[in-house]
Length: 336
Image (cartoon, rainbow, N blue to C red; front, side):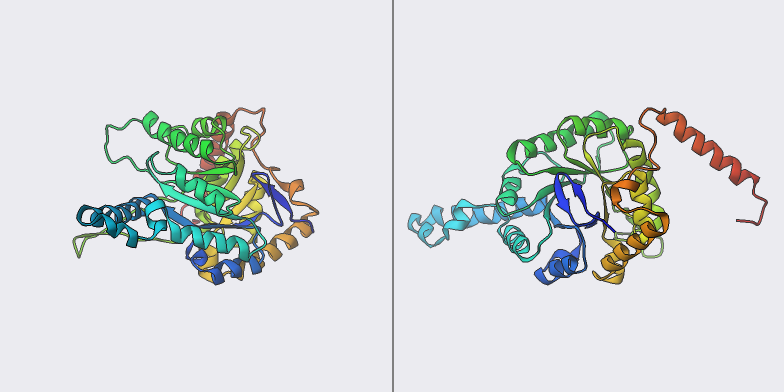
C-alpha cells in the first residue's frame, strides 16, 4: 500500500501529520512521533506574546546597565544584545530537525502583523521545512469590521512570505462571514496551504463559583464535520494545499478527510489521548481500509467525495441541508 504524498511541495511518507501539541516540547517527544510513523511534525507554537516578553527582558539587560556604567555592556552576552528573538525555541527546532527524518514545520501563533518576519526568517535558518501561521484573533471591539479582520490575516501572510522562501501555511478560523472568499484571497496572496480549522478556546461560566472557567478540551469526531465540509467545497478551487485538523480519532476519520479532498490530515487530540504510538494504529487502519476498498495509493481516493469543481456550491450545500432535514423530520418520536 502506497501512502506517500506531498504537502506544500514537501515529500511525505504518508498524509498523517502531528499537529502542535505538548508532545513536541521535548526531543524525546519529537522522536516518538517520528518513530510512530507520522509523515511530518508541526512543532508546538511560538506565541507572539513570548516574542514581546523576551524582547522586553533583553532590552532591560542591555539598556539598564548602560544607564549606570557603559562598561557594564561588556558583561552582557553578545547573543542577548544581538538577538531579541526566541532563542530557546529556535534551538529546540534546530535539534528536532536533526533528530528525525521527517519534515519539521515551525508554528507561529499571533494576532498582529508586527514582529513575525524576523522570527519566521530565523525559523527558516534553523531548518524548518515550512512555517504554519496560527492567526488566533478574536476582535474584542464589536465595531471591528469583518474586512479588517480578513485584512489582518492577509497582512501577516504577506509579511512572512516576503521574509522567507520555505512554504507558508495559514491556519484559519471557521468564523468568517464568507470562509470561501477568505480562502481565495489567502490563496491569491500566496498561501502554500490552508489548515482547516483552528479551534478557538471557549471559556464557560461556573454559576456556583461565580467565575469564568477557561479550559482546553480535546476534539471529538463530530467536530470534523465543519472542516470536512469546507475542504470538500475548496478542493479543486484553490491552488493551496488543504490540511485537515480536528476531530481525528480513528482511521475512518482520516479516510473521510482524504475522501473530502484533504492533502494531509493532522491530529493532536488522538495522540494525546492514546499516546504517540496511536499514529501507527491510524496508519495501519488507513492501509487496511484502502485494501478493503481497492485503493492502492492515497491519490486514488483523495477528493473522491469533494464538491465537483464545476458545480454550484450553494445549491449543493442547500440540497444536502434540505435532504437531511426531511430525513430527520420523517423519523418518529422516540427513535432518536
